[in-house]
Length: 158
Image 1 (tube, one colour):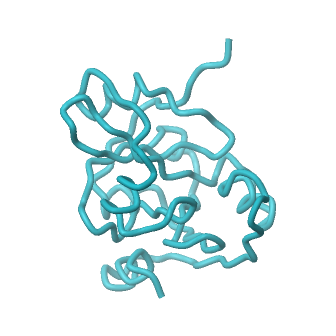
Image 2 (cartoon, helix red, strand yellow):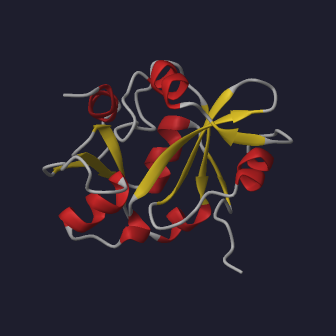
């Protein structure tokens, strides 16, 4: 049981937990989850912790096959600039290990933004708080649990 699953249960949010065997060195965690669970990578969202120019950490959720636009994330989170947070800072603030950082049940509630592509799906998958564990829930429920703002966060391919 993880804090993410406990939160969904406590708030009586409909969800499904999916488990798979994480293989070290299998590449990107989210891509591995999509492959092993046999789901469209566009429905699997990675939890990225960013450092804003005001010194605060925040979270951006984007589909695993996409790249986060730091500029778009900063704008959505009310900052001028954002950079990827150091893994150690991200782990300390969230209480989760890299590759298993969930947007739910974090130690410190961080400001959060989610790519607007999530809204087109009935359910999406995010980390349930450890490698090899995903939680499936509706994007609306995820937003209500986290206070995440919806924005276009993906880098546009040129």
